Image (cartoon, rainbow, N blue to C red; front, side, top):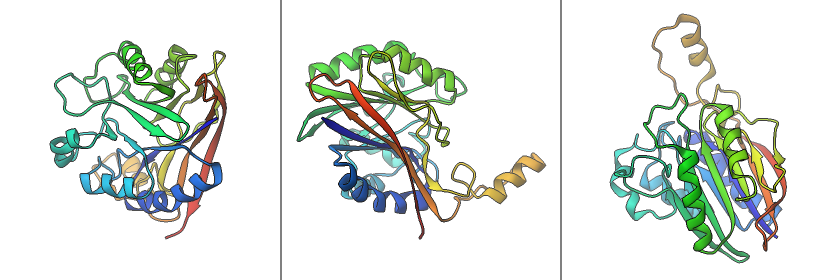
Amino acid sequence: MITLIFLGDVVGEPGRRALYRAVPELRAEFGADAVIVNGENAAGGRGITPPLVKEFLENGVDAITLGDHVWDQQTLAEQIDTLPRVLRPHNLQPNNPGKGLVTLDTPKGKVGVLNLMGRTFMRHAAENPFLAALPAIEQLKQDGARAILVDMHAEATSEKISMAVHLDGMVTAVVGTHTHVQTADARIMPAGTAAITDVGMCGSRDGIIGRDARQVLQAQITAMPCKLDIGGYPARVSGVVVRADAATGKALSIQTINRDYDR
């Protein structure tokens, strides 16, 4: 059996601090073979920097997926080709630096990770993720991946659910990110793929999707521009644990994670 942990969008300093505390605990508790984290809001809520990538990896994260904030930090765009375990969405334009898939070596065999981004209500002009997914999955299988996890970073719930249906039976799990609110639909699809529309985030529990709740509310009430700081503590770490058959890559179970951490 292969055990994978995937944790949702890390938002700012509270999300990072909570993540660094949670990963060792979760690894030990669930016997995780790989921990994958979406880090696309790690740097003050917008993107991730190479120094933060180093921190993630030093604290037990095996691979980092991203999303629509992928190029918000120029230093990442400049250095991503030297960071093989940092994935930008695979279906970005072909001239973008970096890559969208990786094969990780684990004690139980190779694990493939694929990062895709939806197109509905998203700001980047990405290629069709449904078409891009199939050759990417084939490449991961040719590389020897026994289990494959797909991070579908998208706004529309229908697009994320559609990807799970599209890839059912081809991959171990399709997990949704971007909207920061964990959904209640974690399940095993008919052909053996684990799926959840959104895994949630790692960030301020009492904020509004990771930002200061009072500022967000003021912006909603006044409809005027407003500074939106990162929210405070406690910070919640949200995600899923997926267990898969090591021989077939089919999902055996999916379990949600929610842990709160004070400063």
